[in-house]
Image (tube, rainbow, N blue to C red):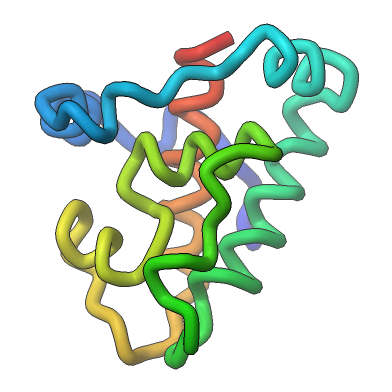
Length: 123
């Protein structure tokens, strides 16, 4: 995946739309999550995001789509729900990325950048 640069995309419009969703806007990092990020570092958290996206979102067929992302347990899981990147149905609804096809490297990069931008806004 290409080198991550949090200035590569302008997510202001996306964050504005997400803020109007009662469900999406209820997600926030806990102090425990912030401590975890502080201990691991943003580079490691980004690696986790890349791995979760590649494994749980990128495949063309996801048998448990809509249920593959836990609601807690890792800061990236919270970021996925907060940003509409938790399942392929939400990816289509919020970001117009269609289900039923393998995510491209560019799409995966966009999702990871969005997740990391949300994390950075929270810490």
